[in-house]
Length: 100
Image 1 (cartoon, rainbow, N blue to C red):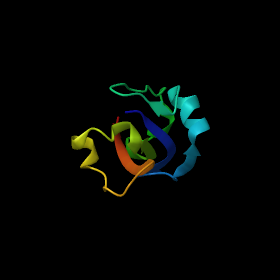
Image 2: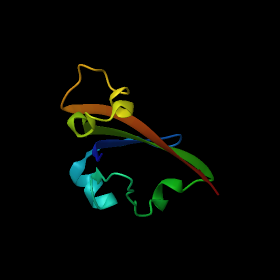
Image 3: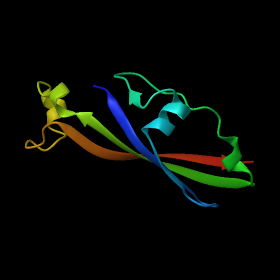
Image 4: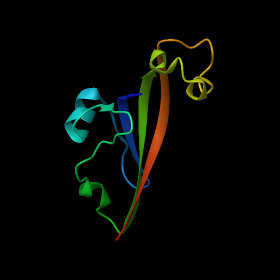
C-alpha cells in the first residue's frame, strides 16, 4: 500500500528547527511525496546541516495511508482501529547523526 508523505519538520541538536514543509517541498527534495509499496525515495545530499563537529537531525514526517487499500488484509487491519475508514494519519521519525 502506498504511503503519502504530507509534511516534514526538521529538528536539530544544534541549530534552529526548519519547517513545516509540505508535499510540494517533499516532492522537490525526494522526487515524489508518495512512497510506493515495497519502494523507497532518495533524498539529495543535505551536507549544510552538518557544519560543526557533530550534530543530530530528526526529521518528523506526517504521513497517511488509505485504509480501504488493505481492508482485506487482517494483519494490516489489526494495526488500525476497526472503526477507522478512509485516510489514516500517522507520524514517524528519521534520525540522522553527523560526526566529523
